[in-house]
Structures are given as structure tokens and as C-alpha cells.
Length: 326
Image 1 (cartoon, rainbow, N blue to C red):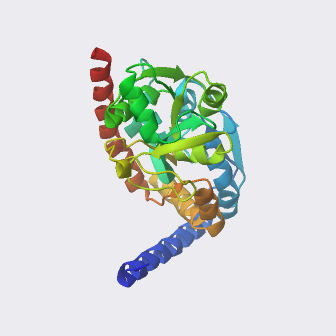
Image 2: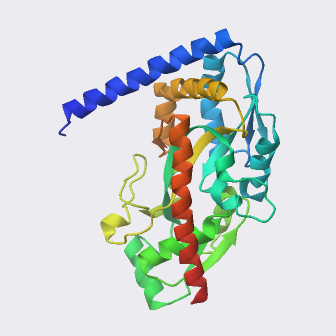
């Protein structure tokens, strides 16, 4: 393997500088008197899902680096909207934080009378992402993606593909457009945990999920293809780009945010603790083991990331509208 030594060295220096700055900021936190009490971490989805797993991976490190307990609470419903609203209404003092899931935060904000916009929140940082995937149950008649595409083209509309949550249908629209097929969409509420028993039971033939879910449930499902051009470190599955099916770009990204108006100095303290936590090799190893791509961001980078993702959401929404008109 050929390494670019200059780039590698620069990356190491940058990473080390980030850790040093994080340590300095955490140290200044004690001098500033924040935090002085437990912090509530809202998970806007049910226990056992991707957001819960993210919170659990970060909990010990955040407690160590902030010097207080992190209390995880669940506020579920509305594809994350209930939990996001809970955070939105919380006191902006840095003592209440939440998962943020992209693109969910963008899509749920478009609901009637939701009450928040993605740009309202104080973002602390994104920590990990997973590319989209198309999965079938173990023992499926489709042994690879080309077999599934061949069947769908020979039988327009007969292939059933499920998706979950507020983003499922638009992700489906992008995927069938990339594959050049006609299929039937099956909406599932309640998350991937609710969808999998139906997939395994043969109620539909395929499902759209994150690659990390494919890793977690690989004893029961096979991933036929991954979105984009990045292979997973934990899955032996081809990318759709490599098979000639370009245009499926789905990504699910997890991060941490605080209520609108949270003071910038407290966000900086939380971000410093977060950077130090995710720099721990045990956290990175845990992310890679389940097929996640680690991320490290400043609050400004996280805010911009969400703003950029809004453009992709709008593009998928237009694809869905066009599909529904056919």
C-alpha cells in the first residue's frame, strides 16, 4: 500500500493539535464552573437503535472528560420529532443535549406544526456516519444485486422494497432511480428493529437500511449493495457505483446538539470533551467494528454539514415527487 507520507504526517499533526486544544478547553471548563451537575442526553428513538448505540459509545468518555454523569433518557415518536422538540424547548444552559440524526432532523422539521428548523439548534459535532444499503433475508432468491435488478426489470412493480421513517420513501426513490427499476414501496414505522422481522418473514423482498444495520444483523440478512463508492470495513458487499448503478447517495449521520441559544463557550466545552472522547481508540474501534465511518467536527463544521445535507434532502424529495407522478 502506498502512503502519502506528507498527508499522513499532516493528518497526525492536525489530530494531535485537536486533542491538545480539546484538553485545554476541558481544563478551562473546570475553571469556568461548567458543568457542575449531571447532563441529560435525550435519545429521540427507541432503545437498541443507532442513536442509542451512539449515546452508549460516548457516555463513558463524556463523563470522564466533563467530570459529571451523563443521564440518557428516551423521548420517542414522530421519527425523532418528539425528542427534537423536547430539546428545542429545554433550557439553553448546556445541561441538556440530544442525538441529532441527519437527514432525519431536516425531514421531520418539514412536518406540519413541528415548531423547529434544523438551523435553530446549537450543534456540538457529528461523530459517525453509515452509508445506505439494500438488504435481503438470508436464503433469498436474489444472490446478488444484478439478479434483483434483472427480476425487477422483467417484472415491473412486482419487487417489494421496504423503508423506514420519514426518510424511507425518498431514499427509495433515489435508489430505484439509480438501479433503473420499477418496484413497490412498503413503508415501515418504528425503525429498522420493526422492519427486520417482516423482511426475515418474507413479507417483502428487500429493504433499505444503513450499512451499520447490515453489519449488526448479518446473521439474518445479506447486503447486496452499498450506496456510493465507499466500501464498508465490516461488510463484504460491493458498492452500487462499482456495479455501474450510480446515483444512490444515502447516508445516515449521527451527532450531538444542544438547544437553540446555548452559550458558545459552553458549546465549545462540550465539543472539546466530545473530540477527546471520539479520539479514544476504543471508541473508534467500536465504530469501525459495526461498519460506521468515524467523524470529528467543530460546532461550525457540524452546522454547515446539516445545511449542506438539506440540499440532498430537497433533491431526493423532487425525485420522489417525480416517481409518484408516473
